[in-house]
Length: 620
Image (tube, helix red, strand yellow):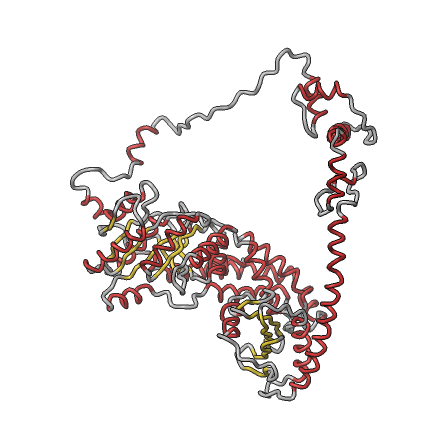
């Protein structure tokens, strides 16, 4: 039974609701659908689950209307899709933008609902009748001959019962082995151009072939190669090539001293670290606007150079298509442009699943919409995709960390940031970059070495702390990281530190013990910000990493409100050229914004994500 059916505009104005089934809904499923699905470019999905409810929807893009049906999740209502289509078609006939009330539509909806329920009942009866036929087909797989020379006993994959098992056991007294041998000989004769029907077996020849190591489908070819080498007394095995050390030039040993950038170990080693920290300069976080405007102007110039060529190639065809084409866009019209757009996104390192969902969402938003005159379908699709990408990558909430730091300072507590991620993505290095950026804004920082699992992790963080002249809290290895982080926060509160940056061990998303330890650290210390550090090089694995991190944190949470990932820090962004799709995949799957981008090896190589530049790179 339907719980609610709602018709509203894309602007949020409710035009009509069914008064007969206007049951009070628990929570706010409609608002959650709009916020978490429709505005996040997930409108191409089949349904949306919210608590005990399932929601389905459809659009009338030409009129800008949204039709939503809500029903109980445990019920499988087969007529909901048909009912939504019938309501959309009927309501579009009486819709007037100047009219705000449609009480006369109640009687029409009652008729449509009765027709849809009758169809659904017929579909349910047909489905019940088809079920035994499906069962017979599954059992019939045993009796169907799948090949020309195969017996009925070969298809033992179905649930054939005791009779089939008896047949199989009765044929295993040598006949089954002969079939295997026959297959081997037949395959060999097929490769050598022999007759397939001749299935005779020469046991002596077969034994000789097997004694020489000739097995499998390529048997006769290997035997011929062995026979051709009879003239040679011994066949020497190829020697395994050994890798030699590369020497660039004669002066290479002399240059090793110049390439050694490690700090000299002496009693006054702190003086050198001060000079390194002072010479770093201003962080790129504060220079992003200048650099992004220059890159955008360059992209605009390239686009302006490319546009005339595109017009020269397809101007007459596009004009003719816009004049003689259909008034409303249909799915068949959009498929070629969406297919090309999906392939383009995948070449930019966007996960295949994300690219497909985005194209489905764009298709749902354009289907039925009128195409403007002298406008190509490809340009319309690309414009809709550009708007969708900008909407996804733009943060839904404020990511001003400095404001949050000062707010925590007024409460006389430190602002805690936890860095999480898989192995080898650069958590410790980028933690030092964030610390340097905070230092530039006159914020006192403390590092917490909570990676008690990996050897050398504490020493690595200690080196960064010495270079930046930042205090570090450490307890060594084989300690509980949650307890170490708690003691570090207490120490920062006593010392008056403004920010605590917590370094954690790298862990794969399937490592249950380490994920449980991470969940304990987050639940015990309740950090202000949980940053997921991920590589910009990953493609499809980005979806798996983020989704499983969030899932594990939610499942292993001890409190009612589970804490998930709040933001993303993308590393190695300077190594990917135009393959920037990982940023889109991570934001789409998690809903968390990209707060930092690592683009180099020095402390200043940290910047913000330029959304417009990323979107242009994805679509060019």
